[in-house]
Length: 174
Image (tube, one colour):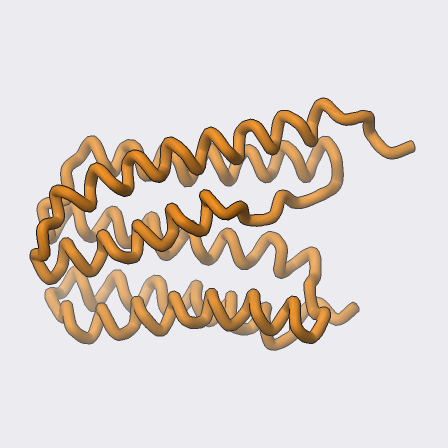
């Protein structure tokens, strides 16, 4: 199967958009940055939909899509810390969550040769992070969203941990 297809190109586009977004937001172009952020989120939705609909799921895509997602979110948290009063404790929680999920996926892939799909709780967490971004930059009760995101990260991480441990404990294919 061809590795560089439309869904994977959309994921690569999201990587570029993540940096464009971060530069714009860091330089206080919050409306333009919000538009780029929204475009990046839409590429995430589109790449998953197209990959499933047209059976274009690839190993590259299974790694590139979550990597692009993590990059966008980590850059978002960093810029929000420096420019929009995101609390340091939430940055630490977010970085820990995202890095531990990445390391968990790598461990599962290395030990079992498979990737772990996104879960409902992971998608829910992503949704709350997107809402938090808009709440912070447009100053719409951001402190409430800080706690919602922290809680959803805890639930999502616990879910991924349980799923990953089950996969690792299963007998390896012979």
